[in-house]
Amino acid sequence: MNTTLKKALIFGFFTAFLILGTLSMQRAMPEAKEDRIYMEIKAYSPFLVEKRIGGLTIIDKRYDTKEKPNASDLYHRLDELEKKWGKECLRVEGNEVSIMSEKGELLGKVLIQNEKEREFLKTFFGI
Image 1: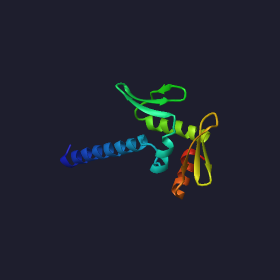
Image 2: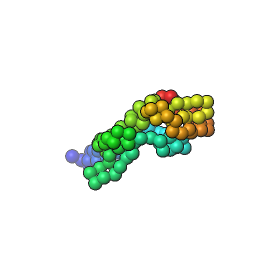
Image 3: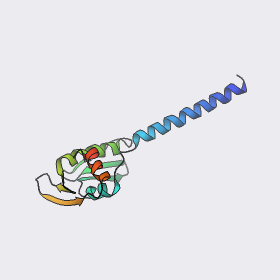
Image 4: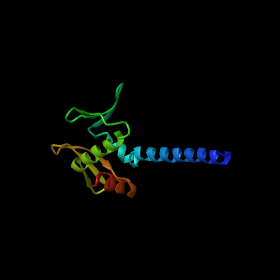
């Protein structure tokens, strides 16, 4: 093998490694969220992520259940659980989001400040 071919192979392997690494990182990232309204709603969410020696665990405070998804699937699974909870327990009324319990009791309200937050509620929670 000549030197040019060796350099091309090394460059090709390096490029393929970078592309595959970047794609796997993008797949493992959770969905983008509107920080302000998401953090205010998250305060009422029944899901916690707990660090343990054996890895990360999703805890559902309502039923005291635990889930241990793979590290790469953790945030995708948490998003799935929060979306399902949001469809059941969040209601948009005018410029406010009402957070309800499973029994229908009002837990709190969060003000929607702009259209980006309203669009986030529609796309993420489906409300």
